[in-house]
Image (cartoon, rainbow over all chains, first blue to last red; front, top):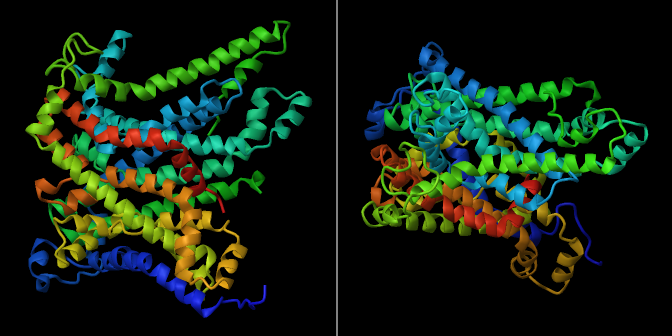
Length: 303
Length: 295
C-alpha cells in the first residue's frame, strides 16, 4: 500500500470520524452529560415546585439536602430496604442462574435450546406487566401461590400486607425476571472452560464434586464477578417492581431509594432533595461494586 | 458462595459401585432433565396463568376453588380494553415510540461505533474510555435535570421528549465497536484507493458488514424502549400519549379488583416483545454475550 499512514490517520479520515460521531456525541452530551452535571448542582439547591414556576426562588443550600437526608430515618429505611433487596436478590439470582446453567450445559440435557429460551423469556417481559401478574398471583386469599401452598399443607402468608413477605414478593419477581440473563452468561462461561481440563482430572480419579469445586467454580470466577456486579447494580436501582406491586408499602417497607427519589422528585417536586438521593444512590452503587472488586482481588488463586 | 451441587454430581454421588453404568447414566439423565422441566414449569407458570386468567369470565381467576383454565374462554376483557379503556391507543403509542427510538439510535450508534473502531483521529481512545466510564452512572441520576431540560425545550408531554433520552447509548456504541473491530483495514483502504469518500465507505461498505450486529442491537433497543417505564411515566402526562406500560400501571391502580381484565392488559403488553424475542432470539443472545465480553 502506497499511502503513508500517520498515527492520526489522514485528515479526511479524522474529519469523517467527527462527522460520524457528532450525532451520538451531541445527544449523549446534551441529554446525558449535561443533566448529570446539572444534577450535582441541583442537589445543592432547594429547587421545588416554586422553582419550576420561577427560577428566581431557587436558593443555594450547600450540602443541606445531604445533611437533611442523612438525618432522616425515612432515608435510612430506604437505604436498608435497597440493601435488603440487593443482599437477598443477588445471591438468589446467581445461585439459580448457575444451577440452571450447569443443567442446561450438561451433556445429559435434552432440548437445550428450548430450555434456554424458556428461562430467558422472563427477561424480555415488560416489568410492569410482570408486576401486575405478580400482584394477582400472590393475592393472600385467592392467589394461586397461597392456594398451592395450602394444598401441600403450608399456611399461606399475606404476601403484600406483611412488610417482610412483601420484600420477598418483590425479590422473587426480580429473581424470576433476571436469572435467565445471568444463566446465558454462565453457560457461555462454562463453555469456555476447556474440556481437556476435565478429562485430565478424571484420569486422575477426580469425581464430579471435585471437578465442580476445583475446576468449574474457580474458572467461572470472572463470569461470576461480572454477573454479581450487573445483578447488584440492577437491584440497587429497583423501581418499577415496588412501584406497581406495593407502592412502597406496607409501612414503607419496600420503598427503595429509586422509588423514594421518584416520589420526592416527581410527586412532591422536591427536585433538589431528589437529586441528592440520586447521588447518594450512585455512591452506594459505586461502593458496592468496589467491595465486590476488593473481594475478588483478595482471593489469591485468582491470578 | 458454595456452588450448588451440579446435576452431573448425581452420576458420581456414591463411590464407584458395581451397578451397571448404563443404568446410572440413565438415572442421571432423568435427574438433569427432570430438574430442567421443573425449572421450566416454575418459570412459565406466571406467564401461562396470565394468559389463562385473561380468558376467564370476570371473577373467575381469583375465586374458590382455584381454576387453572377458564370455564368458558372469553375475549370480553380484550374487547373492553381496546374499546373502552383505549389500550389500543397506548399500544400504537408504544409501537411508534419504540420503532422511532430504534431507528434513530441504530443510525447514531452505528456511525459512532464504526468511527471508534476503524477511523483514526486524535484522542479517540481517551474519548472512548471516557464514554465507557459513564456506564457506571445509574440513569436515575440525570433524570431530574433532564426533565427540567425537556421542560425548558417545551418537550414535556411530547413523544420527542421521550425520544431524546434514547437517541444514542454508550452500550450501543460499545456493541457496534466490538463488532466493527473485525472489519479488515485492507477493505477500507482498498475503497479509499478507489476514490470512495469516507461517508460513501461507511454507507456502502461498512453498513452492510455491520448488518448482523445492527439486527441484534435493534432487537435490544426495541425491547428496552418498549419495556421502559420511568421516563415515559414522567414525560407523558397526557393520557392520550401514554405508552402501554404506563397505561397498564395506571389501569392496575384503578382496576385492582378486575384481575381478568388486568391479565388481559398484561398479555397485550408482553406478547409483542415475547414474540419478537422468540423470532429473533439467536441475534439477541449473541448480543448479550458480545456485550459481556471481559476486556
